[in-house]
Length: 153
Image (cartoon, rainbow, N blue to C red; front, side):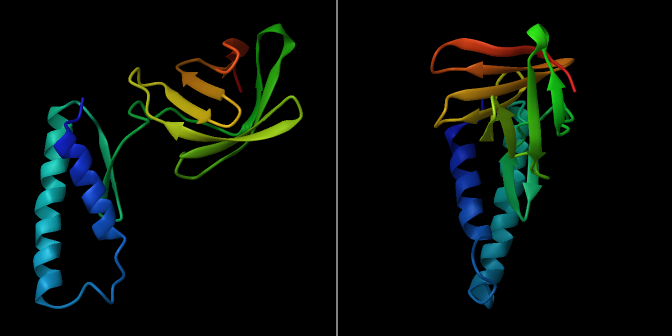
């Protein structure tokens, strides 16, 4: 489990990376860039020691929510009991997906799962899409129901 220092450092780096280039010039900016590089390496090192894989995007270190590198193709997933889930779109960074269930589209956001599974949630509807090796499932967390199981593309 990453430490609080790890989480704070990631948040701080996100703030630094979001600055405009006009603000990042001169000796102060050079010192800040050097400090950022040292902090980035420290965050990556601490994450690795904690067993968390990371990705660095635009200088920002983020915990990797897909450590097993599961593929998540769009398409119609056929499930048990003659059910199907249409994954209409998956963002290129895999941080969101549009899922069609019972003639309605839901935008699900990627969330971290300790098990290593890919987990996508829509907080408004309570829908959760979970992908593990060999199958996927759609859950309704509001009603505690499994909507579709053993789904395969």
